[in-house]
Image (cartoon, rainbow over all chains, first blue to last red; front, side):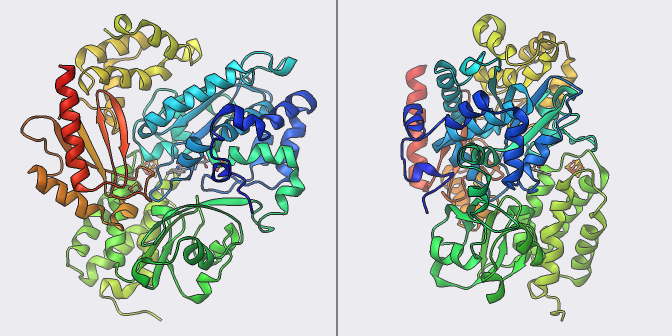
Length: 415
Length: 167
Ligand SMILES: Cc1cc2nc3c(=O)[nH]c(=O)nc-3n(C[C@H](O)[C@H](O)[C@H](O)COP(=O)(O)O)c2cc1C
Ligand code: SF4
Ligand code: FES
């Protein structure tokens, strides 16, 4: 099947505006503005069953329909913070197929009545952002952004806003705080951004990949989109495949593809032909999936991965083979979370600190049962007590790693 | 003074946000301030605070919160090597160790000539192109992927040469 999102794999210069136009580019945005009511656009996206690709899998059309029409102005914000360890799909999209993402943002902005949209992009994508600014300027020049588009009354400006190195700013309310010029500390929710977002105004926040799906949904229709993937998860997903794999990279595949196909057919199998030991499907925030034949033959969608006791998240699939000890993996994830905890709430701030120290000493060779038990208990106690999901994420690999790989902690295998 | 040195750009940055929300401009302005010496000096902190009607303490707390802002001078080029989990699964720690040995520094230290500081960073969204690092300098941020120690040493020489020419 030809790519839907990573279309540059077939059309190499689709990042140039004339090539994008020649391949049907901006047709959907023009169609929406000229011939559709904003609510109709939202209805099509709702009908397509598109779910957010940033991690939580929330239905996109439903989110747009929650926008509060009693409060104005409205904003649209693209989440291009991409900082989950193991995630590198949005970067490829922005670099190689930027106009499809920008057109999706534009359509979304029209649907929710936003005249200003921001792209919050991680500061490390500095060079990429300079290019993206040029792409936006080209769209303005050709009349795809600006005032009174396509002879209508609708106007739209898109601006980029660089982050500056903070994973927490990927969490949508922390992102909005950061965009307001503050430290990126998550807000207490509810209220959610569609009623209280940027500058306290109704705001839709979506992931880059989510937006990139939108032009084709408007162009080809909801039924076309639903014909791809599974009933639970429609469409394709970009899997960022990393770790002990022969051919790491991004692979766009329909939902329902098995882990076996992803790892062996696309990823070329494991380095040196070794067996897969564990999969982390949602980057460092993942539960550790203990891999057997049943797991490898699982068709990947949100519901099926949940049945394996894990989450798909942003589909940042880290593959771990039998040369790697899980206590080391946990220590690495905790280095990350201890560093990235924003410190706003005590369970996460203190919990990540203690877990990092414990796992450090466990990994250094001190695998005393009482330390492993303490680590496990600290993680358990953090769960459901944190203000945002980061605190929860920090416990996932710890709890499931110890439960599912006790031998790596010198614990007896529990039946 | 930023407003004197880059008047057009400052205006353009402020223009991206609603006039009553100008503190949103703090992040782009801090990046601009770092163009001078690679960190935000006292003068810039003061100027940004007064430009945006926020206190200097607030500006300082923002500098402290985000890892890409710096409050003090380090090596001209910060080499920020990713050794987060996915990179580490593909040999990033070994690369880092080898590079440090070659340069005779430890993580966090600067070479004697003040040119290179070695730092480690969390995932940079390049986990399929290991070993990788970014450089942060007054010239901005740049990625280097699929690197080797030899290629990195060559890069350092090239950067030093370019630096001399500018001087
Ligand atoms: C700690 C944390 C980090 C996150 N990082 C990102 C990110 O880098 N990119 C992203 O799109 N969503 C990220 N999210 C999810 C966002 O909060 C939000 O759900 C998402 O941007 C919504 O867009 P979607 O519905 O299109 O997925 C993160 C969430 C948390 C809790
Ligand atoms: S859970 Fe952690 S990251 Fe989230 S608000 Fe609390 S301290 Fe900050
Ligand atoms: S872990 Fe190094 S770039 Fe992702």
